[in-house]
Length: 179
Figure (tube, rainbow, N blue to C red):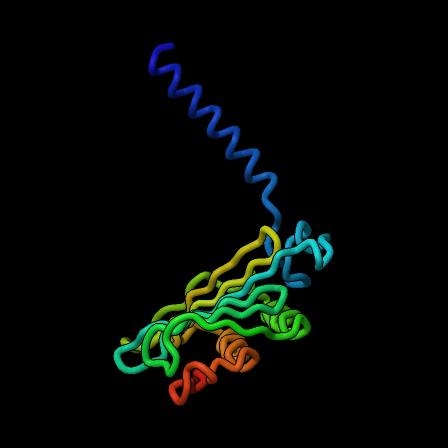
């Protein structure tokens, strides 16, 4: 088959696949609901849940660590710098605490937030959160001085730290971000 025909066939095939894939994508959050129908209709036991909070470096001694929280309550802490405990530590929180954190994500319409909030003065840390429920995933990169970031996002980040009791590993450096 000539190259010209092959490229048009591939373009046509790619376009039809794209059209099919866009039709089958679930609709993201609306004002009345946070999750797409594909997630809403699943029972809680059939959904895999994972949420993360990562605090990044700044020009100074900001604590650098990542928390990963699973639906079963398992928490994995990875301390990097400017924390009392470096390395990997694990603990558990109750499933009810995990459900409450997921509810906090829902209350701020997490899936409707921007993917990134930037701007403001330089050399400050970021807080990167993510939420996975079933096949739905969202990550938000929040540069903390961003003037456009909603305060409810900062409150959520601080709530995650509190629920996990991250201060047990970060020590005196774990001051909550200002609201």
